[in-house]
Image (tube, rainbow over all chains, first blue to last red; front, side, top):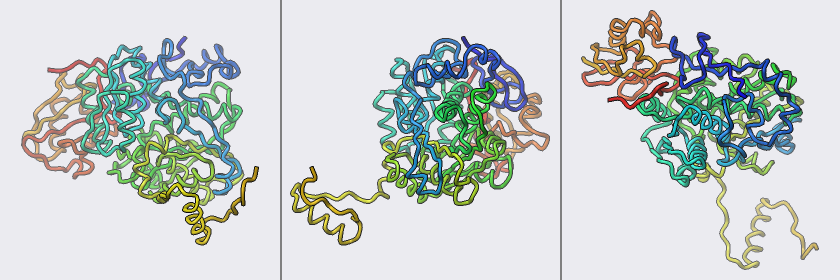
Length: 424
Length: 99
């Protein structure tokens, strides 16, 4: 049973039936899915939800589909990692990582939105699925389309990391590499969408697709025992994720399923920070920028939902910061060294910003903090590789290893003593 | 200067379903004035009185966002194309291949 009440224009409030329409015909503002919360509260409960399989569809009453889910049966319910060593390193008491770097099947938070977007696309009768992507979305759209046997076009900037191109190509979609940045790709897709009957998940399916991002917020609350963290820090690119996590928290409170309040913070790379600049300038208007950062997955200079990021950050009492590429790389290392998680630069950005906010005193040491880890470092190695310490290459002789190891000890890089002989 | 203006599907209900029109002007602002004069209903929905584009509509001259050029004062030349792009990005409620 569906509890979708319809689509509502975020600007002028006009109501529409939940169909293929994706912008308001009166003012061209974006549309938001609204629900019958009274009906949801009567029909299910958080205890019933807690009994369901561990995937995004456990919250299906709060997702915009009419029938049964088509894909994403293993997507979502990623670990919420209590990060004690990392917390200590950056001066916090209670830090959690929402680890979508291991989301199924394509290792980023995009599997949430794509599962919802494609399920809805099928309900609306689309047979060809497409997207404009910085890489992660293309991977996810290609994978879910493949398992459903759907025709698929993915449009990406030609600068996308090779691992992300392979991560789409293996599913055999039609990959279209565009000479230009993501904003150029998005502009082109918007024009293509006007001419071809294709379901672009992040263009003409956007009102439905973006709803999938709420599941990250639902899960955080549920995994904390139906309590909101006092602070939530999320990366911001096109502006999908942050407003939807804000909406998820509000929905849980409306339903009486979760308690607490969360301040929400936006993180951007300094080389692409149009939302943070507007936040710091105290304006509502977002001036587009030309991205220049190693954080390719969040290199969107003209964010479609940027104004809503500003609104949600301000309404929640949060803030935002930008991190330089150097700070992003340091944060990637810190996360790996303290928690054993290899995240992509977007997540490095979010962690670096968390660190800044703690240093600035905006996030108090003793309060609970969730940092969104939205993508996997193994896909972004090309951005990171030239900055990593090189590996050593040795022969297979133990003597060679011992000689090399001695140089490490002599240089003070190897503080641990070595066991003399076998310890067991 | 005659400039081709491309119109996204959701706006075509106010432009007699035309996907493209050729208009005259020396700057983006002048072309938009012509657009408003020709299609007053479309114009009033996404331009404020100062003829500034609304935040839900972006304008691209030959595929470049005019905010990276001289904004509304960007000069236009013959055979230029001015694309109106919905900020949330395009697509069609009942999309069909045109032409």
